[in-house]
Amino acid sequence: MASPKGITRLFVKGDVNGFWALFADNLANMIIVSGVCTFVLKIPGEVVFGRILPALGVALVLGLGFYAWLARRLAAQEGRDDVTALPYGISTPILFVYLFLIMKPVASQGMEAGLSEGEAGLLAWRVGMAAAFMGGVLEASGAVVGPWLKRHLPRAGMLGTLAGIALVWIATVPLAEIFENPLVGFASMAVILAGLVALYRLPLGIPAGLAAIALGTLIGFATGHSSFTTEGVGVYVPLPVIGDLWIGLQALFSNPWILAIVIPAEVYNFIETMNNVESAEAAGDRYPVGVCQVADGVGTMVGALFGSAFPTTVYIGHPGYKRLGSRTGYGLAVGLVFFLGAFFGLMAFLHNLVPMAAVAPMLVFIGIVITGQAFTASPPKHALAVAMAMLPHVSNLLMSKWMSLSAVLKGSGGAIFDSTVVSAMAMEGSHVMGHAALSSGAIIIGLLWGTITAFLLDHKPVHAALTAVVAAVLTAVGVIHTPTLGLSLTPIVWGYVIVAAVCVMLLWSSYREEAA
Image (cartoon, rainbow, N blue to C red; front, side, top):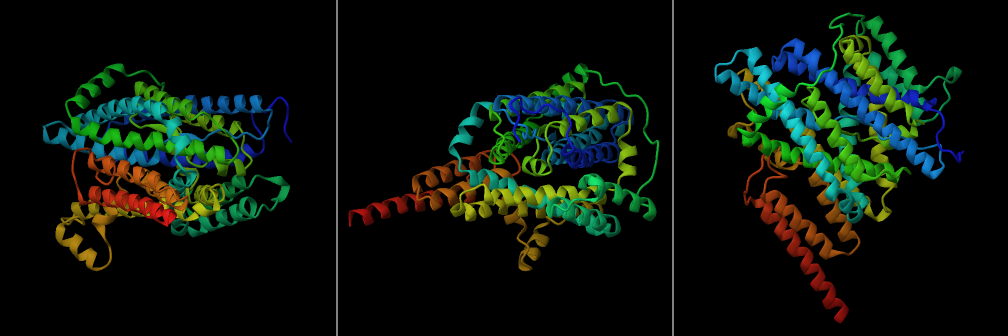
């Protein structure tokens, strides 16, 4: 029931479920950061636990606190008590871009130049910080074009490409985690399906998310997948690292290839924020997209000033959190927990205590809610456009897994991207190069193809043709379909030109039919 004063309580019962879902999402990213930085990039432990994780804690508590305030302001303005704050955290796709396309090559170059493992790791961290800081500037700049894009692009294109991310990354990948640990995962999944999907009331009114994670953790102790540990526990005060950031900026501008990766990655980020704000509006909560894009950029820059090498952004999933009954407290609580957890070095403790298979069902639930919303919140005739926008993300998942396999094979003397292997895989129906083209800039590609399809469904061939021309230009300069920036008139460019020409011919044909 709406209240004339909006939301009065900071924390409501539904925030418990939302807390565990958002906590699980960010915890997985924190674990990835600490693991890759320590064991792959060889960044010294005092930097990983004393600088990077506390800096991410600062960025999370500031960002989630801001979005909780923004939600409470919206509730007060509209006299509602059902406003849900936007979720926020480390951008998962961009996290891997920074780790393996920026920081890993920098560390390798440092080793080749004669640096020790630790020195090369420090250089990778400093350059990653600089890339994140510049990325924050680019994220904030999205506020200039974000509102205009939101007004003129079909909802099916924006929500469809988010649904692709949700189905592939938020639902399918965690579902695989569940099937790798079925004793824990199936038990938690059953609780989620009953309590959140079918809306059964659990005994004593226990929130389904909490019950699922508690049950999974108990089974985890019985099966050896949960444990108590004091590994990494200590006091790590977040402090600005201006000197290290300055060294990183100098190295960044001496290596322009890094900017060629940062720019398209951050274009992806600010478009994802725009789409996520659109998703929230479709669920009933209208937030200013420009303000959100600036907030994401500022959060990333503040994190970089304290030592973070990774961008933060509005998360996909607002409709799922709203369905959970979450309001404003869930995000703020997650921010505080991660800030305190990083301050006291508790990330490893939390990781060992709660099995990932126990929290994965929450992510599966969020993923299927987002996917469903893309269809229900778009005009029924745009269902095909939603489906079209989802497709590039399947290729994105395939390429991610193939690249992981390639790294393993390369370490043992093989490589999946060898021309002979690529040809052999094509003969077996695995079109590596085609999936590679679709996966580079998947969120933008999905948005463009969904938009073209929606405009054609609306019989707006001129709008579709203009969208195809934009796609051709973005392809020609390397924003989509290629891993790095650079002018290249590939066959895909001319393919988009042909699409535009066909759309123009449709207009001409319709004029002839009207004249007849």
